[in-house]
Length: 264
Ligand code: MLT
Image 1 (tube, protein in one colour):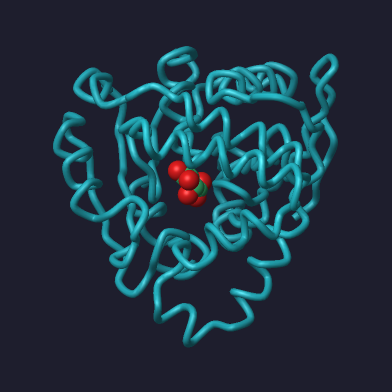
Image 2: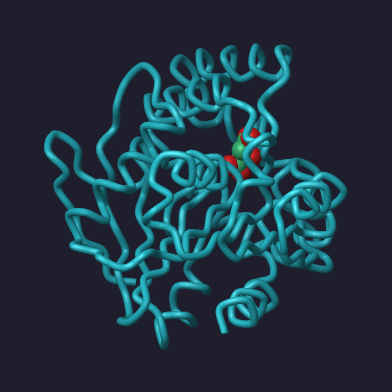
């Protein structure tokens, strides 16, 4: 997908842009880039203006040291839409950390939202123990580099069947994770550790909402996703057979079909 660097004051975001029509914003997970949405971007550009940024600290975007909160990433997206002169409300889709950003975007910029798609994500905040582990991993990312993050995350990101049947996907995933800047990894890990619980916001969501989860997702499980879907009025729920936490990448056709059905 063609990408462009978009300047937002002191920050530059690398953004994949394709297609024309209604805006569809795709927000990647940790520690990935816009490229994880490759299949959906290509397919849905037939009807949508697909906007898939690399979040601050990832891919080709600027890196900020210290901490980058989910609120900051949501505000970056709003600034991006402003700069791209997007006037109509968007469909906003986020996977995992991208979903945490979606909750904050909804909270802070809801006039810009037409529909929400939450993929393999959670509304709950980290427990104190999980937050502590993340902060420790942030320190290791700085000293040891992305390998520390690959070791911690890779075994849980995809379903066992993906590991067995799609070795090329695991290789591409590892390469993408290994190319993440260590300062970007640490800043996002610290930001995720201090994110707030979005669960109380769910009953107030009043735009069409779709939840997608891989059947074998070990990080944001189907049971937890069903509970979120039950809390959002009128939300739809789609489970992707044989996929794990990276369902759009592991089962691209099934996830694109779920998007299409919802977007019709
Ligand atoms: C992600 O895929 O973005 C991460 O698994 C999010 C997390 O670690 O909570």
